Length: 432
Image 1: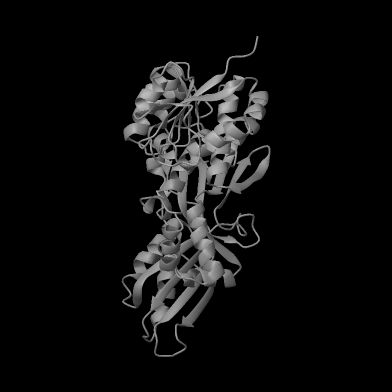
Image 2 (image 1 turned 90 degrees about the horizontal axis):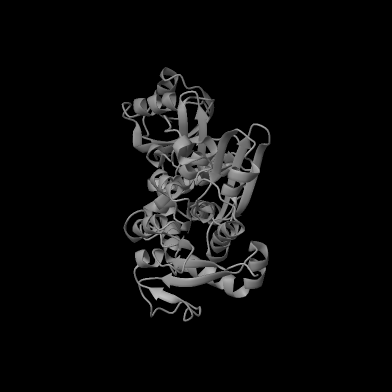
C-alpha cells in the first residue's frame, strides 16, 4: 500500500514560499522518491490573494489568516516563511505546535527571540521544529552541526552570514565607492530589508549567530547577549587602506564558549585576503565550524534568494517525511543551559583610523594614549587627504595584540587630547 502523502500548509507566498511551490511542481517525483512518500501542498496563506506570483496556486485551499491555516486538519507540517518575530508568524507557529503539527521555518528572528519557548512547546506535543532556511540560506550548516559534527565538542563558530552587508563591503572595495552610495544602490536593487538596520546594523546576522551558538554549545538562545556592531562606520578609506595591508573587511560573527561564559559578537573585522573569508564576494555566505576532533571546516554558498532558501526548506520537509526527528536545538529543551554572557577578552591586533588636526605634537599625543593604555604599535601611517601639508591628516595605526578592554581605554583617552577630528574607528583583525 502506498505511503500517505506528507501534507504541507505554506504560510507566506513571497520569494521563498513561491520557491517551495516551484520545487514541488518541478521535482515532485524526485522529492517523493527521496522522502519515501509524496509531498504535497494542501493549503496556503498570504494577505493578498489577487497578487500575481508567477505560479499556479489555484489548486490549493486558501486562508487569509495563517493561524487558521496552522489549525487545519488537512495539513501535517506548517511551513512558515512569512518573517517577523511577533504578530501572525508567532501566533500561527504557536497554533501549529498546539495542534501537534511539525513546523519548518525560515524565520530567524522568531527563533532568536522565542526559540526556547517554542522548542519546549514542540516537545510537549511530540512535534519537531526545523529551521535550516533561517541561517545562511542554502548552506546546510544546521544539519552539519546537529548531525555531521554531532561527535565533536564545538570550539568555535565563525561566519559571514548577511549577504547584503557582504555585497556592500565588496562593492565598495571593487568600485572604490563610498558607503552611502553603495547603500543606496543596494536599496534600489531590493537587497535591503524594509528596515535596513536589520541588515547593516548586524541584527539579521546576529539572529543567525545566536541560533548557531545555541546548537553548538548546548545553550538556550541568547540573542540579547550578542555584541552587535554594524557596518555604517566603515569608510572607503578603511576599505582601501585594509586592502593595501593585505586585508578585507567583513561583518564577521564569532561565537565561542570560554571559562567566563558564552562570547557572541557580530562586528566588522579585518581578515587576511588569502584567508577563506577574504575572497568572499557579493551575497555569498560562509560559515566555519571548529570541532575538537574534526578541526576547522568551511561551508560556503548562497546566503539568500528563492532557490537556495527554498532548497533549505525542502531539505527539512524531506527529513520530516523520512521520519527524522531531532530536538530543535540538538538537545532536549530542558537540557539546554542558560548561558552566562561574556564579552570578548581575547587579545588580537587592531586597525585604528582617525583624523587629526594639523597641530604640532598631535601624533605624539595619540602614541602616548596608546602607551598609557598598554597598547603597542606595530605599524603607523599618516596620510594627508589632499597632499597639502596644511590639511588635517588621516592616521592609520595597526597595533600588536591587545585586549578589547585596552583598546577601549585607548579610545577613551584619545577623546581627551583635543586633536581629533570626528570619532576614531577601531576594527579587530581576526586571524582565521
